[in-house]
Length: 310
Image (cartoon, rainbow, N blue to C red; front, side):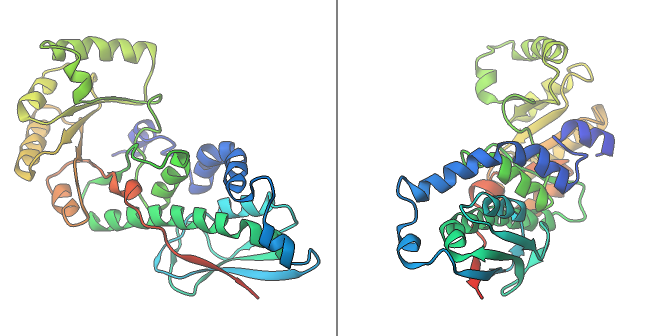
């Protein structure tokens, strides 16, 4: 995919990681942190720390990885620290996207122990979750290295954490799909079911009107049979940007790629449907351009980090 087309198809495709964080995560982060901390603090605050730790105790603490993985979420940790009840200074010792290993230091915190302890679990949870998504994404990206396919995410995200998880996908080397329902069009099987027998003509008319009135980043349509795909190829050029090949066998995907190459070069093909780390390489080798993997968000396992008081 050319850089120009990527910037149109992929949201924030031309952003650096830091710019992506500022655009995608930062605008809603402070109120989110307040909600996360309220889950722990309730009305009374941290009873244990209030009862046992003097406000005068100053410490230095280190965040260390306890596993191999891809680091993601340090800017979130810094923001959580900055919103604590006391003055916590933070110094990153790594950057998002770094590969971490057990014992590796990723950040140093300095300040009152009574301020650090109440936010410890919240910042570890967010760092672990974001790093888990980045790590899972990197595994899939590594698995298709050398092919023309990119790994894209889905909307199968944790409610309330979508922007963070999409930032983590990019940190792990993945490509972003649409952010939500508002920025691109994906016509799925249940949409087609509502269009009736003449759905191809209905798709053409609706897509043209949508481009003129709503200006989506792209229009994508799902098919699960070659007959449907052939019908979509009959549409005028420029109506559809991406065709989603849903739950197709490898041989069928190869046929679709060959038909696309003969009849509609430039049309992007995206594979989807229960794709695993063991099957993704074979899917990429069919010649599809994009592989949508829900597992990189819905099945990612947290990377374990610890906070050690020095």
